[in-house]
Length: 171
Image 1 (cartoon, one colour):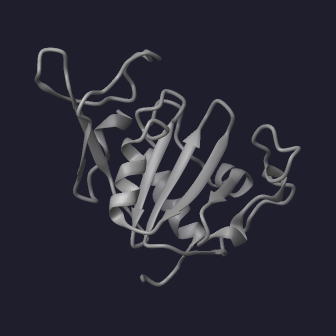
Image 2: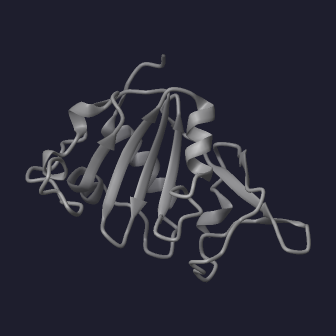
């Protein structure tokens, strides 16, 4: 297991990576105010306002995080849905579990997912998704394409990119 990172270090990577997105990307105050967690490695970062029987929708924190909090886990996803401002950090026991979640119906192919950032051993790891078009050719998934809620992505596949590259689906 990798040494834990701080929330601030992870946030800085996420901010830099999403900075050229059409909506301006993630910002530090947003991350510190809205972050919540799924899984067990980072329960200490969970937002109590999003727990319990009266948590019907996503809530901001009463008191923002500071950024100095430790973040644990070798395989993490930061999922942002701008329509409800949810920002969920999820830990996974293995790389294959992380990859499966990226390709899952609630992953990056979901029209409601704005950003789905993968961290491996504390480093933001860009990726691209390709799928098979009706003509049989491989097509690169572009998050900026017009939203089609009924669209499927047959034989979707994930490929990890060089960490210095930005994922093509953000453009």
